[in-house]
Length: 229
Image 1 (cartoon, rainbow, N blue to C red):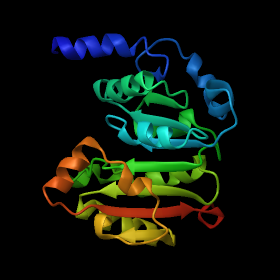
Image 2: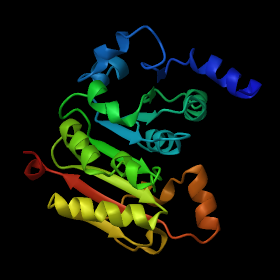
Image 3: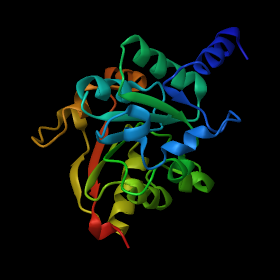
Image 4: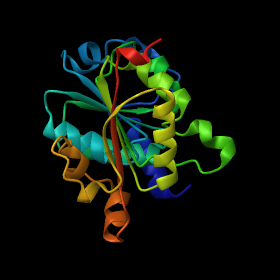
């Protein structure tokens, strides 16, 4: 492991906005399940997750634009989280946190109807068939999301991977969900209902994709009461 990465791991252990329950012996953080806003952020504001947040561009960007909401970036890669967490601390943001866990464990850390919105920004498409169930829009994850989301709350997906996008459309059809917005070319989409952040915030890799002329796919859907059984 390089010295730079070791330095980041050392620093991230001291960051007040980072929780690493899978990597520390102290499990006091479990107390936040079901009451993140009240006990961690000290308010009653809506809670928004960026799952697979990477360097946390959306967590930080959204938190900057919406000081009246709380944002948590989730990823398993500590060196990536370091970047978002450091940027957040440098900006003095009080409404952000970063949680270093596997996405499959979100139900262990968030209570029923606790989350108001989810962003999936360029998640790993998991192209190998044995790993399809690990896609963040697989049926297993849809089940996890609808357990922690407030009814009728939105889930956003941004991806440059056509296979993942089409797979996601098949999944939501299976659940009889009606997407709010579907775009096969986000940056040429004139949909008036489109969330500003879908275009105004870009991930590190997205900027490269767009510069190279790649098509960006976007989907917004709500998991309402009808999806709970």
